[in-house]
Image (spheres, rainbow, N blue to C red):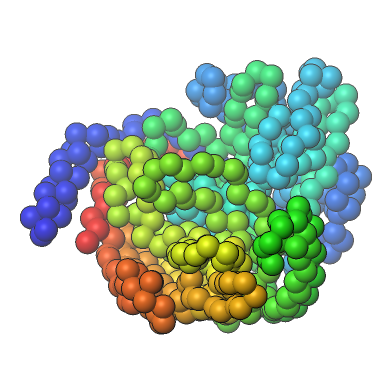
Length: 492
């Protein structure tokens, strides 16, 4: 086994030598100077507020598609303001044919039609960012960006505000982004990485404020910079959200089945909470969490012997999800060619493993999922580049009710189970080197012999390491060179 891992590392190093290259193209690092406002603008998609006069316009977008490094067919400009609690962004998308602007009504994160977006590296770790997208129709999209722009997670759904408008000059998007939705350290003066982009649907054209050459292995470290933010404090929020859910189902009655009487009712209650432990670490906790309002999974028929993987949409597990990513077979040649993850959170609260064997004249009422008795998660990233993720969750012993000619008994179909995940990563040199480790544990209290095929305990662990070669220079001035060697990861 050790020889196999050594061979993987050797192959990775050879591939770096083959595929790495230094980008010699000169790219100017853009900056934008924002300003503080005492009066917040009204978010209406119209620039009617005098506070916007405090800052100047920036623009000069560069086309990236279909013609790289060429002027766009339509220009784009923007302004940025801030106050004690929010960041304000106004984007003017000029269009000489406003009647052709694509205003497709879509759901959140569908990213359809004409759109503009701002990506914010508020940590300024040059590895992670938060993306906020405005469609011309007024629909919103948002994503958590990790791995230097190589991973985009649209399951992240922050609270922010958007209004759009269309006039004879084109269309506008006005945003209010609360600082509570961003993550940043406590500093007197902040420099954040930012990138703004635009898509013109009818022309299949994309343009960006900070030009990033195609083929650059990563994006966030090449973003432009936002200057001028000062005297803001991370928001140490505490949220408590109790809930009660009552449910009634009506269905076709099955003669002779005491569990299919045509009507079923249930009531449940629980509590969700969030607390900022420090400026960088957030504690999420939940007692019998309510997942009833979460977006449903797509229908799928799986006739294989392999598990179906669905996207995680449950709010408790989405918070800081990127920290828990550990992909043992992730390739360095093709990004996301294999995206298996050592920790798959959808197994917590899954459907029971076992279905009871029934005799003649027996009927069973089997729970559809395991009840999460309680869950706690501590996650965040410090200003020194240390990412921490600790998750603990307990699911209950689930019993199926079995009726045999009026006599009822219970049979365990899912044991009491404890799940634990611990994950740490440390950035060195602004993310040029990343060293991390993970430990997972599953412990079950099995009382039904029919479930003995499940392990009573399972433990996994690993370390990952990536390093960006020294044959590149970050953009740092008007004539700096941009480029990176592809990263190499070794995992055990």
